[in-house]
Image (cartoon, rainbow, N blue to C red; front, side, top):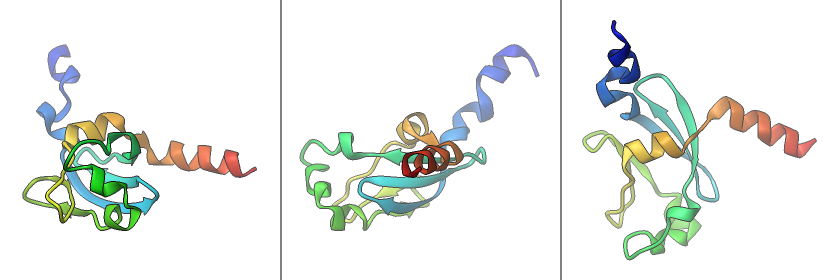
Length: 104
């Protein structure tokens, strides 16, 4: 493997979503094809016609993983680009460690 290949892990496939689950508030746990698991807080992204309704936490919590789209979607047709989820996400282990520190 040359240096260029190392800079492009999985040729862009690393950010393909494999599964997702609602956590709390506007936080989602996302599993990616490269094996990473990240927590993404989407509160700041809920602007515009498609996303404003998702400020209702009950509606937001109805997210689901769409295998065809390889990302998370909502019943109103909103979805989030998987590459955004990957880049914006915090490693799940690190997130849990920080959460524990805040509780202490």
